[in-house]
Image (cartoon, rainbow over all chains, first blue to last red; front, side, top):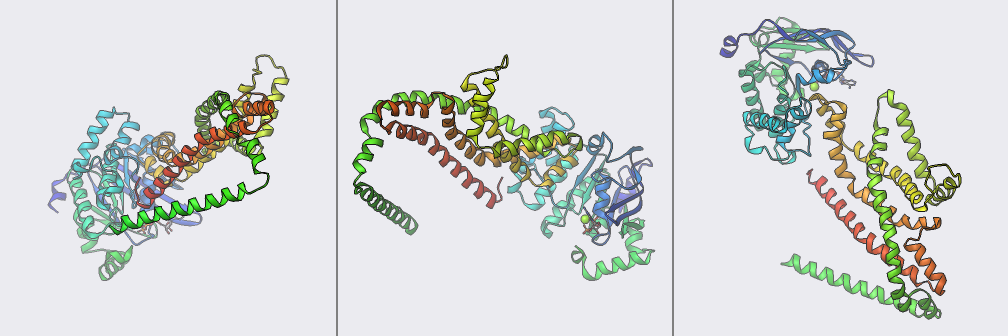
Length: 261
Length: 268
Ligand SMILES: Nc1ncnc2c1ncn2[C@@H]1O[C@H](COP(=O)(O)OP(=O)(O)OP(=O)(O)O)[C@@H](O)[C@H]1O
Ligand SMILES: [Mg+2]
């Protein structure tokens, strides 16, 4: 955990969720979530399937309207109903469980699209940025490949590069290794570790406990749409206070993380 | 080795069986007692060669008609498809108009519409409204086929998985940008075969405008037929249409097969 100690986490919150609630029909999926991300902070969301991790990320990215509470980005209140929600979304990067790369575009074009179209960069500048990102994620040689000729792990890394291309203030990652076989998982997690070292601010939903313990500054345990407990990895994995967190971790350890998917 | 030999054997069998069936048909038709009369009325060599230049000349009207119509239909059909795809409630009137448009023009027989527009509208003698039959023939074909083509576009747009638009929107693209750069490029690639199919129908339907007095290939053939009391010019016209439509049909088949292969292979 040398990295965590070396890293200076700024006091100013980048992303702030206050009392965020979300319903699907009658089901309360998020129940008064309070969550703050400081600059350069890496927070991992853990919790059983259906606990609301994906919903939380989608709401934070303004892809879903919320029913109560507020979301602030850099201290500015934002909402999915805003007229400039598209503009806000450019400042947030998200990568989903299933990587929806654009199949008609090469890896390079996938990454360069948003900078060119949404940010208004010149094609040359957008391409330059895309190349740098692909290189950063170990995909320099695959720039001109179409998604269908890439492995799952490579596709997922293109998706991460694409999400980073608008230089988001926060990167939201949802279970991005769950569709991959273990060999490929390692590549993707390695790429994320490098990003964390580089000072990216990230909110990550994951079932990979070892990865969470390694990369996170803070772990949030979710159950039934609530944050039951949060704290440093040492605290959550070493000495969880809440009985529900203990029960969850015990189950994870006994059945293995894969059984939770 | 064996694969090549069995392929050659397959071709041989196909050729022999086709020739066999064709011969049987020829014998059956030729043995009809009235075949010589029919042959003279429909397949007369002299009438064929004398009608050919006139019919080909008139066919340029058909070509003008369908080329102009296709150029107009491509964007108009797309606009109608987009109007139908808009979910924003503020644009409900546009969507309703587009729906009525496609329902109406796909539902009315083409020949009726050609009568109504080609004879009815000029008869109103409205100032500034053209009277040329060619103009109204073009308008009618564009109206009808834009409705068909818009449905082809719409099916293409709807065949693109919603996760594609969601991914684009998550990157901060606006709804329009997501459509323009992510959904449409994929959709358009898929609609080429069905689009060409509709265009084959359009090319054949250019013959319908003969009822307005436009002297295109079919009308020209009718004139020659009446002058000589022989149907051969009509067969000449059929041949010319086939020369245009058969290659296009083959192209559609080829593209469709390629599409299927690409989708099975998980390719673009
Ligand atoms: N679009 C939706 N409509 C209705 N219910 C939904 C919708 N999306 C999620 N839910 C429900 O909300 C709850 C939380 O779902 P969510 O996907 O956020 O869980 P999760 O923690 O990400 O689970 P997993 O680990 O399986 O990905 C679940 O009970 C789910 O059934
Ligand atoms: Mg999930």
